[in-house]
Image (cartoon, rainbow, N blue to C red; front, side):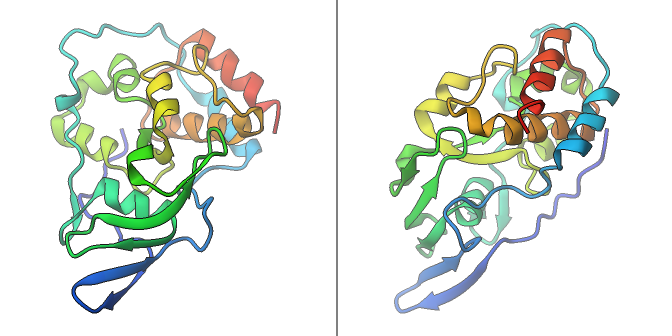
Length: 214
C-alpha cells in the first residue's frame, strides 16, 4: 500500500473579487482531467503486474469506512477542489462552493453548467476497493484513497452516468462513449496498481480489451 500524506496541493489560481467572491482559474479547458493518467504502454505494463484474485467479501463495508470529503484548503473540501480543477471558468463563493463554470464529463462528453448535474466519481469505486484489499487498510488509509487528488482517482462526471456505474467493475460497466475506453482503462489500472489492489480475471480481460482501443 502506498502511503498518502494528508496534505494535498491546491489546484488553480484564485483571484479575490468584491464581496468575498472568488474566481478560480482551472485547468484552462473544460475537459481538464485528473493528474497521473499513464500512457497506454505504461498502463498495459501495470495491468500485467496486477495480482489476479477473486473479489473478497463485502462484510463490514460502508461508505463511512472511507471518510470523504475532507477539508483540503481553508473551507474547500475535496469535492470543491475537483470542481475547480476539472472545470472551466469556475467561480466560487466565500465558502468555496462553485457558483458558476462549466464541466465536460469524460465518460459521455456531456457539458454541464450546474454543479447539481455533476458528481465526483471514484475511478475505482469504494466498494470495489473494499472487496479487493482495502478492507485490510486503516481508516486513515481509506480516507486518503477516497480523497486522492494526486492520482487519477477523482473525476467530475455526469451525475446519472456516475449513478449507473455505481460500484461496478470494468467487466460490468464501461463509459457510454467508446472513445473514452482508453483513458478509463488506463486510469482504473493505475489506481489498482498504485494501491496494490487485486483485480478479477473478468476485469483484467475487460481492461485489456479497452486498452486495445488506445
